[in-house]
Image (cartoon, rainbow, N blue to C red; front, side, top):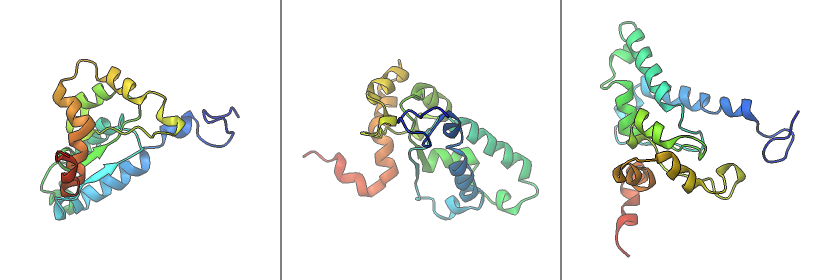
Length: 167
């Protein structure tokens, strides 16, 4: 067994990386389909340290599940919004520095992702901001502002309002 990028023999490898989003995908989809986000429309869900490259396909899969089960499951039929609308309204995801933030922003929407670095752990990379900037490419200043600041403030709500006040 090859050592992982931490140098250990039983820690974390490429195959483990592939399965990271599966538990949050199912847990959040369950909350959504069970109407938790309808009952608590101000609830915000931050999916942190799980990556974000999977978000767009997961949203499409939930839309497909919605279409497939809306006639047969009352819990799906009684949802006030479509699954992707809940994601845009109430959820934020942190991409890994190795993921293409520009592409994720275009595919899943700039309001769905927020900056994180995992500093000082090695998996956060040596230059996460440079990597994020490179992957944002020619994204607008509004997309960058949402990624680096506004999406976090929206996730945290009133409790973060003091962070925007001038010192």
